[in-house]
Length: 153
Image (tube, rainbow, N blue to C red; front, side, top):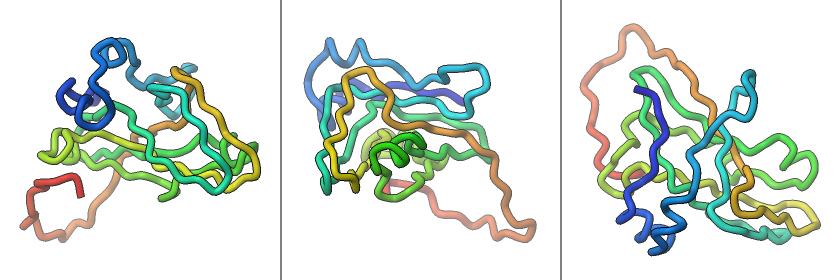
């Protein structure tokens, strides 16, 4: 089943903070319009990204997917056009087996960089990134002797 979930409160406490109220009130990603391709991720707290600064932003979210799918993590196009803010890795690729991995439960993060000349402010609850599900193909003659994922990287 394809779905977003919150990480456990234990993982949230370890990665973000030990605030039960914040944990209970934040939202799962959602599409804002019927024809939107991306599911918007929302800030858990206010943050400012100063010119030249890089920050790793937690989402508190993990994702479960169907076989043959991946989730692409992307910035919003207006972040680059208006503010020159982008993901450090340009596109994050979340694989199905990242879900519930032993290191961090599959907690997804966005690492953002401000290459502009102005502060970029995001308020708690505002969208700051998006995830798009994709189907992918594999070669027909692939060897199926795969390793099991046992960590986040």
